[in-house]
Amino acid sequence: MALTLRPTVAEIRLSAVRGNLQKLAKTAAPARLLFVVKANAYGHGAAELARLAEAEGLAWGFGVSCVEEGLALRAAGIKSPVLVLGSLYPFESFVEAINADLIVTIASLDAARQVREAAGRLGKQAVCHIKLETGMGRIGARKPSVLKIYDELALSPGVKVGGLYTHLSSADSDPDYTGAQLAIFNETAAELELRGARGLLLHAANSAATMNCPVSRLDMVRCGIAAYGQADGFEPAMTLKTRIVFIKNVREGACISYNRSFRADRAMKIATLPAGYGDGYVRRLSNRAEVLIGGRRCRVLGNVTMDMTMVDVTGVKEAAVGAEAVLLGRQGAESVTARELADIAGTINYEIVTLVTPRVPRIYTQ
Image 1: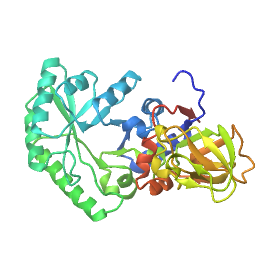
Image 2 (image 1 turned 180 degrees about the horizontal axis):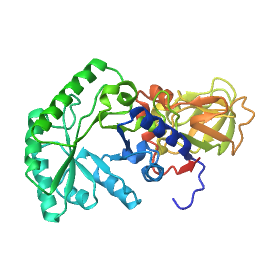
Image 3 (image 1 turned 30 degrees about the horizontal axis):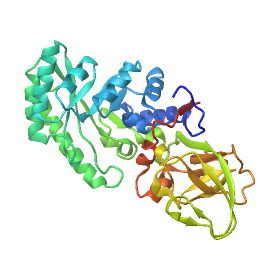
Image 4 (image 1 turned 120 degrees about the vertical axis):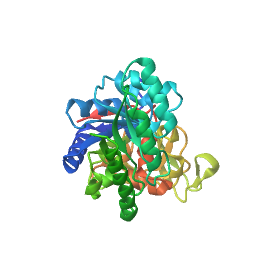
């Protein structure tokens, strides 16, 4: 938005992202770091953070979910390698990806044939990484198919197989299962080498594995959530905040918000905040979450609405129209974390930050 008057903003601290990436790179070394910026950098702003990482040499390249996200990075001036982590469909996706020098994921024989055809049509070399299924159950080919895919691609001078990777499903909770996945991966990589594959970039580790499973780091790690400070030992980068736009005093028995889901049990002072589920502050936080005003925790009252949320500011002397309210982040000595909100909403902290919608301006600070 060119004009920003509404006071609801997501403040992104670049110093936090920088420090988090430096910590990940140092931990992973000598492995390379792929900075995962899919879903608009988990809500933090992909173009801006990719520019930061590229300009300061904080990452080898970037991971995105789809071709469109990769094209957006190229449009933002990003020159570093960009790996499309999703399975490409339809056929035109390969054409667009190759034209933009995006690295594509190949997870089936059909995709291998399509990338060969697209590269031949364009007269331009395609670079791909083969995705091995080791137990995530999402996308990827099992070992016998991976070997056939490699043989198919090796026939074409227009396609370069640059890497082999898998996704660890439980690196933060099940080391035995993670070890079993890595065993399958290492066995497959060894068989590809016997087939003549040389110089493949091998990668499996996400943020949790990078920090807790050294043998998973291989040639490269793929880190997202820790870079944004939503993992233990890292600094959160996002603060979601707004300002009070209305104050009212209500009597005992007054009802607040849709469906009268809160009824005052005493005389209360209530503030209205211009933020709601239309901004990503999910409705499940109704009557349960707390925001920070004047450095104090203030409970959400009634159902969170699309554009507004009401909170109890009884006894908060700083509460006035224009006073700052922090929905996510720190204010004074208090903080509301994404994990706290996730526990209330029955989800994970990844979702809390990713759901902050595009209508909330991102403000970047040092």
